Length: 466
Image 1: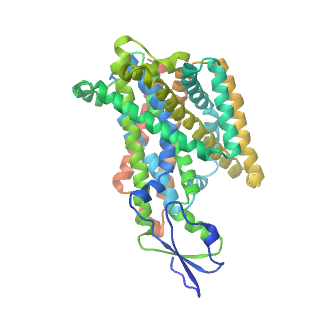
Image 2 (image 1 turned 135 degrees about the vertical axis):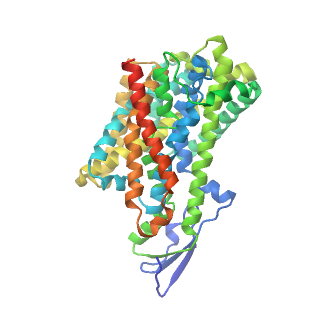
């Protein structure tokens, strides 16, 4: 990408990018230096990975983890690291694609034909069960602290509030609070795990795959569907990376504006380093926290036979921590849990609406206009509020609704995973080949895809044929 011109401007593009107002005139050269890779640069660069983790830390960790521990002790613990292993490449490939190609992975989906957009559009609509379950879970925690509203009204309030914040564009301040609350909640979870001090021999032997206990088919499938999060988050993560203007995204944007861009030799290598850190740090913390939730549930709830269910879910989960720390921890756990689940609702409302919007404008190119895009984006969110409200009042059982949504997510996952593999394999050409995943990573990705397909068939067999 070497170009010459009479005037050059040199910019060191940090993780947050540089200000477009500082750009030189058109037809001039912009020399982009590589971002730093220190601690501060890493913190600034983190975003798409954290956002993806936030979509899962709510329902999977707070709802599935304690439920599995309370019902079956450590029997299902092995699922969490196994699910993280199987799905890793689905998210890594989507993020890598955007970083290297400078565009959303949905561009690659479009080169496969129109069917991926029909598939993703249908999946977006089916995910109404998921958003209703997450809202019910968040509402159950709120109801535990503030029972002056019913579970259903709290859940609907969460849906409406989410849309209001998105439309008002006031999420920045709320996000800061949510991140702090989630960190506090995760620290409380890990501290509770350490204070309970279960003998490692009790659970380390349960990290080898075993058949699910009798009656655990739905929860078995649900955990594979939602840990670490659903595979449809991969294109969402790609879209967030576009917004972050990571790697080649900013370069392509400048080239479209008529600038000539020179890149420092280590520009992409440093971005790859930052991207890996964002992915891996978020992934490892999410996995360890999920395992801690299940183990604490097994230690505290399983012996007394207390299983999270219905509107009492929030009180039951809080019990895991009040039994360890005392009653004073109750508001901290409620605040952290509500923040975690609310952030999940929020990120899905934004991410899934963006995916649906992209599907629509790619199937009907005449709709690819700013006003029409906004109409589709907001219309989808209104549809989710209406349909989600119907599910909330028709089936006010947070754990069950989320389990159904999780199994649906598992069934959708193999094809979505395959689409990400093909996106990278078919579209990395020329200089992109330097950043092609290794053969080992492709083997890992195929293992994940086939593994999720086999698990989907097995769960259907357990649920309907056994």
